[in-house]
Image (cartoon, rainbow over all chains, first blue to last red; front, side):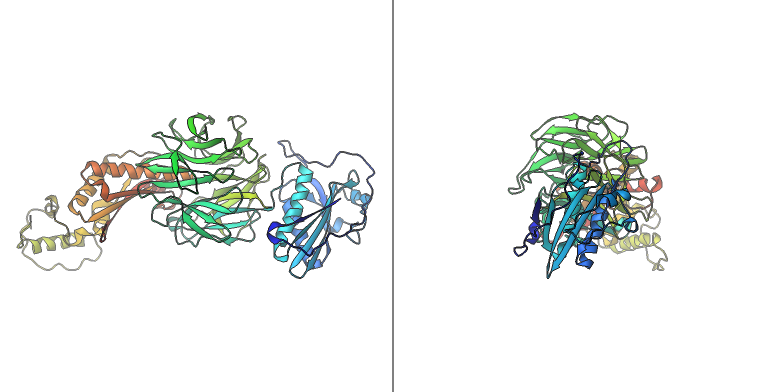
Length: 442
Length: 179
């Protein structure tokens, strides 16, 4: 009944699984609680997350992050603490479903956080208050105390996955570009942060102009474009050691807009020579590249399908920038965008079903999504300048850059779910652009 | 070819011209100037080949007197008459100053995606390069790159600024040893 997980980066051997007191027996065979992420108008699911048991200080911090993760999706509304009368005396004590029904809770999360020196152990359970039974097994996470936020994200991920039927995404990181200085002399540096903007680590120092970081599928590496040689070239950065090396160094060609294939063995990128930009494919270990397109038009912003078989990209071969899909070996591309306006920076969903993109119509910019055959186009945002969508690892949320106009205009990261609801600015205390959402961490 | 006797006078004339473009020019020393009655511009019209010639052989002169920037229409990479006139002067200067190299920086306005604007700026830089090469500048002396929308010249968010940000800038520098 109780699964135990140890966060990979924080392996522990001393913790032992506690013997859990039995929870109240199920007395109904109702369907599990489920909230669908669909287009229809939804009422958020009412969820109670009473104060966690255990060591009070760390327990309160973990509870706060779990609550922020869940309510931040727009799918859940939290029962206020003052309305709660039913908090059990201990984590092991059976829950009183009637008391939670009385405050209209549909779901209930209980947890206990224990700190033992440098380590913490977190146990949690999820209950379906409507049917009066647990929803899934209880789980335990052991982690270093410094990783308490990751432990909290893991709990929230379990709750989200069990209540939406979708894959989780809270325990993930985002690479981005921090922007400082005046608009005509911006200083840019690459950072990596938790998906919620916390725990920022700096990957470059701002001495060279850097653009558009892209996470590897396993989250250990970052591709980016750097002007450190004076000319745009692609570099590969190791996140753990914060060291990088040049992947392209051609004095006669500009290379930019790199992204990884799904297994991390291939890189697609744009290579410019004599004013003409085409899509190239490279094996990062050998550095050997070859062209996938050969056209006098601009071909850029390539993005792999999750099965590694196809590539979506932007081309102005028709006279204006539009989206095209080709096989991984090149060949004749198929145009998929046909609406009014100019399309760019496509990103293939990790679920494989949709492509997010930037669209300019007149003087307004949108982030939109469409199916991979171009049908079902839907705009999620509108502003003076929105661009560069990146997918959450579960393919249900995109993050993008919104730039405000004028001489003091600044870029800010925002996220929005694929229904177009719940658009939120990231809570950062600096200007940032070019997000790349990494994988769910193990 | 300029003989030794006329060179100091020419230099003085050049200095005097340069001073006209600057605020608070220093008082010019009286000189006997054999070109005094031919109009100041006349001194530039000969092909004054042969490298350094006072202040003309400087990046600052190239920038302020020859003109380092050409502008483009929205989403366009073709060179209009104004741009071609500037580039003709750039080519003439580069052909007269063989020790200099040029880097052409292509730029785009802030609308448009980052990646497309990088490619668009590269097209603009390449259009300039092709024109200079057609005017006789050795391709080996010219490199191009694009900054896309990363380095606007003007920062407002309307056409008055965007029209000046859609540009290619030729940056000259004296080739170093071994270059």
